[in-house]
Image 1 (cartoon, protein in one colour):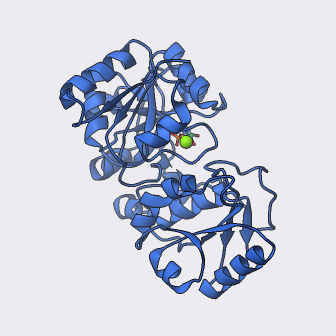
Image 2 (cartoon, rainbow, N blue to C red):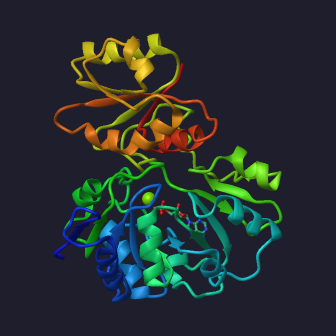
Length: 344
Ligand code: AMP
Ligand code: MG
């Protein structure tokens, strides 16, 4: 057990600068510190120090072959981690960074080998959250930072989520309040002539196309291909999985109500996750509203998945969302989190 420090930006007796200086000192000394970004909370360690990076894998229980994203404060710092770039990358950086987008680029070896999982490429991002940016600036080294959750669980969007998963396993948590976007960054492979989306996220395919024209979607993009047939809980797609099994239900409100009723008639305690509009039209007992717009759904998604607790609820039902804009990221995460996909 490590004694996990917790600083609350603005509310602690210390100034923001003092808190950030303390957190940066721990990071530079090779410890792990969680901090807010505009997407989700990240668990940081010095990306040039393999021993420090190893602590991230240990704390999260993350598989070693899953590379980490290196976070930097500026374009100059980003360019120091990579070899040659296709021209379009600078256009993307100028358009979207700082922001929720990660560029996969040829690594020049400055990041430790366990950051890149031995790949010749490195994923680099400039977050836009003021606390993340300030911390990265003071550190002045790239900070490897995957989501600050236990591997497999929903990503953390508040410092309490981080505390719930990692208290005693990491050196500190900088609490900067809830994150904004709520789903992880878009990952874009920029090693080829045409960029290719590896993971949908905070910046949509449509927005990227406006800058670079053609964008591919990687055929290997793991969308948790649960469409074929219902899958048993705990099978292959356990990423982002809540404590309680999640079923994704395709179709209209009447369909959701019907699936709900069938389960209740079987004696199941069912929680429903849907946007406000849908919930107003349903007759259900346990419900959590994801808000109204797709942006609100993204921002509330992981927190809501964590709110349904084992022992209180047996199954979570969630509606599906249109795959436009941030809806692509929402559906990607929901498919992976779900143990079952109930078709129309
Ligand atoms: P997380 O920060 O937990 O959201 O996970 C980081 C994601 O970035 C993982 O899905 C990694 O597979 C991906 N990633 C990081 N570096 C690379 C890279 N060099 N090539 C491809 N994917 C990467
Ligand atoms: Mg993650």
